[in-house]
Length: 342
Image (cartoon, rainbow, N blue to C red; front, side, top):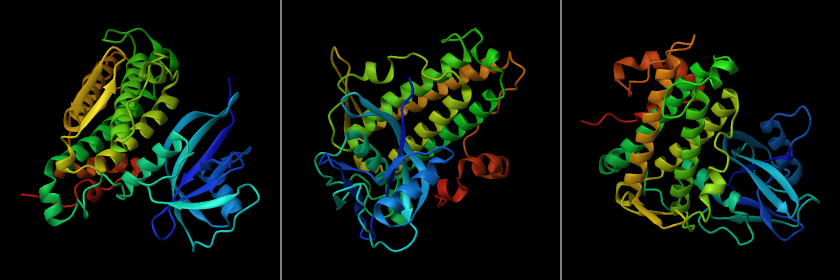
């Protein structure tokens, strides 16, 4: 089954409040709309925002993607992006909506779909305006000194994304036959193992984000994340989804402070509840990724594609060896190591 695609943007007015629009159903939604033939997602979103609000935005990184039942029987595939204003903000409401609304990221209105709320929370964390973010700039002076552990968890999230990028770039060189071929491992193929890494990421990142925004535990995580054991059949599609997941995890970790690491995340397991601190849950998630990436690495040894080096962290003297990877990821060394501590 195919679904229409709608690209939506999260951005703020100059006063820092998120821009929302009220539709004919009296519901609030993010600006954006249906992608047209021949358009890129970024081109679609820029066009839609200008048509709906009369303002221009620069479209940035993807935030999330999901299926959304707009009304009973009508489902749309939503893709959300972070955006920034390019010029001034003098909005002009189009005939497509009834009202423009400006809302703080931690004081969103009712009748705003949960998926939009989640995208705003991810954007807010990345922009360091989340109500759960540490006070001040955590990358500077005493703030960095105080939040050593949460800063380390952020570097773990970056390293996790870097390792996934290297591994999936290698796997993308495999033929579809080699990608799916039966192999010895905890899961029976490279395809199955990589899908497992991703779906478990979805599960735990959802739980962490829910706690951060004060939402209840997911009521049916099995149907949401594990109903399909291998949701992606090709490495290219899986790689794109893993990149989006890694960005969500980095955004979440960027908003952490040491004093908040003890907050408890609750997961509804159906037959009981799991209660773990943020710190424990993140440590488990990173360990899970490393464990299964290692299995894929070993499986690659029996293919025509050489397994990439994954046993590095971020040694200072090896920065030149990361140049290509960081260019592809859009990262800089200073972004990850902004200050050298003793």
